[in-house]
Length: 164
Ligand SMILES: C[S@@+](CC[C@H](N)C(=O)[O-])C[C@H]1O[C@@H](n2cnc3c(N)ncnc32)[C@H](O)[C@@H]1O
Image (cartoon, rainbow, N blue to C red; front, side):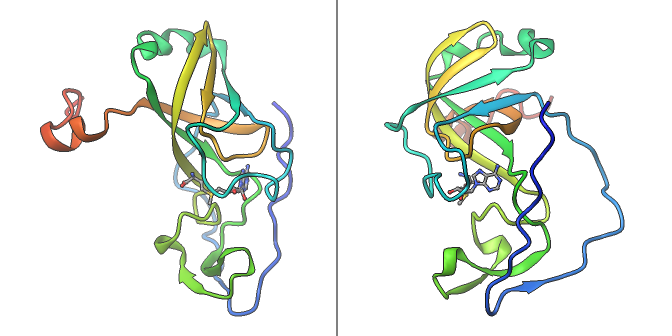
């Protein structure tokens, strides 16, 4: 695994930072990496596009069996760790728009736990490599989870795995 880049510590007028807690409450396992055409945060699209360029999700071979059956789903929800985002802003403005909002009222990567989620279109699976369209993250972003996107089915009827 490559060493993470330092988080952005710039702050804009009106933004508010708070001290972070002394320690974290849980740990995560990075289960792979997402490879995209975008080398920097600024180069990334604001949000993913299901008709966007092919990107590659490389899952660590340790978790290969966990992918069993995933090709049955044309859409997958991807959770990833925005490693370059600062974590202490409670009020922020998006890319200098000047409009201030609370962090939990935004989908900004800047949040206490910089977890992002996007639904992507699965184009192809080859062993632990998934070709997808729809990520909005920079190349090398760490993958933390994959879930089938069952959209309205889950909302209307409940998931058959909810209780597990
Ligand atoms: C607005 S966020 C939305 C993320 C996700 N789709 C969501 O809704 O949770 C997407 C932006 O995060 C930024 N970004 C992408 N990869 C990042 C990374 N590894 N660390 C920090 N920021 C990142 C880029 O500026 C990108 O346009």
